[in-house]
Image 1 (cartoon, rainbow, N blue to C red):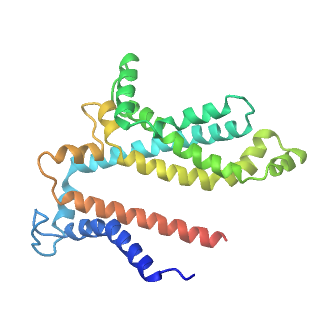
Image 2 (cartoon, rainbow, N blue to C red):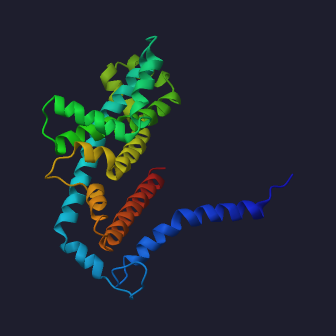
Image 3 (tube, helix red, strand yellow):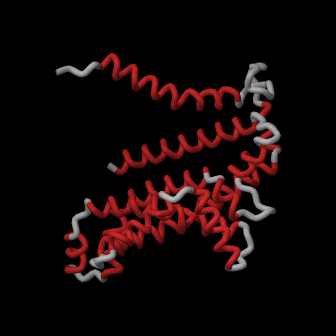
Length: 257
């Protein structure tokens, strides 16, 4: 029985339209001369020039990038070691530990934010970049742990055994054999965790200090006074940077084949 390709193509086209049409308008109105998106005032680079002079917004972007990189690198180390440890563990409570490790992505963010705020207050930690990194690391770990764990499931255990038979220590076998095979899972989990960290508003509001702004918090607070097309310009630049990184990654993968 043949599939109805006409309706399936129409269905896929509608999905792509709803997904990418808003992005198209964000890019389009970043070049709008008018301040309001309801009126097209002509093509202009005005908002990119305004963005280059907006120190507060650029500082918030820098803080978000530093926060995302710091939390993802820390989460990558902890998540990778945790996944390897769980894979090699034979404890009866292994399933429960895996469930607990996935809790941060199942608990609503507002609850996590309140828990982190109470915990940091109990420890008398000053709210700022340190508390942000700790909180973001905590909810980034499960994304990396699950990706690495999935990678471990399809890995042949005899590879490490062969390295040990050839005289390699357990640490050397892990660094030279296991870790390179796990890197695709680590990198994909880290990229997903970075995106979640860069996008987070709720948890960041609860654990952020009064003198530090991240990009999502800055945009959220600006919404009360009206967001200017500078945000469209910034989103367009960030989208372009993301597509450039993906293109470089794809080219590198093809070159290594």
